[in-house]
Length: 558
Image 1 (tube, one colour):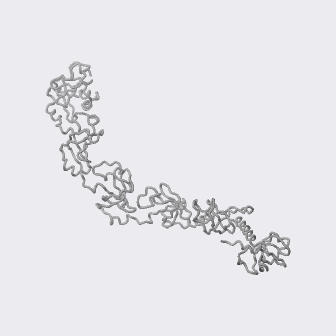
Image 2 (spheres, rainbow, N blue to C red):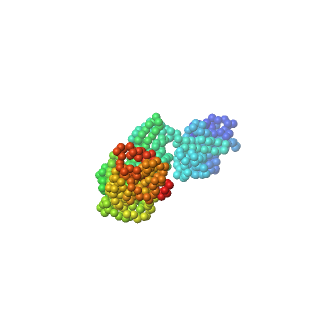
Image 3 (cartoon, rainbow, N blue to C red):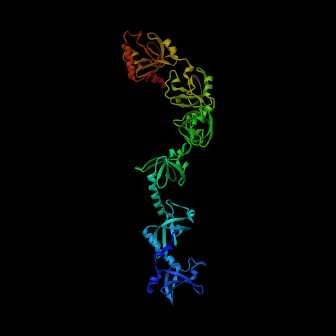
């Protein structure tokens, strides 16, 4: 601690001061000795003048020897002696010295002695107050660690009359920090290692103070493994080692790295792990597309959602796995260039689809419950966890079904036939209509263009009448082919349930359309009439497919 008693160099010797100027003056006097009764100390003021200081101002051992110059505060004259005080001189000297310190802006050394309300007490020769907000560069909630610490302080408030002195340690640290910062700025370079303190944490990273300069430690540079949030790795106030990855003094941009100082788990990865190997790991993260499994610190692989189960449809890995769960996985692939490891859970077991393919070859018939219904078909369970799809187009040879739910219910047992199994895609195609022969094969032998056949009227429409040829297969008698005379409605000529003899004019198995006529006995030589039928049919906006799916209207006037 600096010594304010060096004021001997700043006070005048008592021998040079006249008597009328000694009162309440700070002077330097030579110590003579103790008086005869040892109740006081005697000092030579010069010119046969003597000063007396009470002996109880000192301990048993005097801090000076005869002949030493000592600062005195001369207070009054009593008889032939002046009454003075060394203690008061010291205090007065300290006050004058602190006043000059404050005015000059210089620092003073002191010791932190005690904690009090709002801050700390500091001994700088006299008692001074250190506010809590001025203890450190950052906020300090617990000051006990600073008790007994020696430090430099700046006098920020000075009230001599009230005896109040307020000091700041923070301002001294700021000055030091400023000088260090400038020095650091001039010496910073990429690749340097520094010890820093974490000041602030954001979603994307942490800001680290490396000596007055804050640098960004991005979340991707914190650890070799996946970091969901920076607070999982560091906390405010942590002291950590970092390396400078980027330094741009023009933009004052400082990029830092932490993982670069750690061992890279991807080094020599293929010497430790190979495809096909079964390893243990911990589930560290669950996403919509899969689960990340840590095989060792900083080394993670992905179990894609499609690799969780052979048979179960897993929409999210959280349906079958928990974060923190330990499990075994099989390594599928290692891409050390992209630092990716593909893992699988399901491939630890035999592929059940291979068993299903063996037990359910194409054309196999079986019954099973409908597990779910969609707008494109039915899912039917073959074995536990294994389902096949009956596409809506494979439900009926003749009906047009807009939605399978119109005819089927979940849980319903139905018979199906296996159409195809794709082991790699884990798909089983099933059919319902294939359980029965295709009626169009039968009708092809019956509905021969140019021949007349008996048909039964089933439905009347504005543009004609539908007639059943064989069960489930109908042909269209256009309104122009119902009568030689011009008619307004088909009901003027035919009625549902009526059997008529019609000429087969057209048979299109691919489009599943049959054209009939009641007014012709043979096909026309020219195609104009047939073209007229096709055009009128198109204009009507209706096809056989459109009408097969609608309820049959038995009203003759429809």
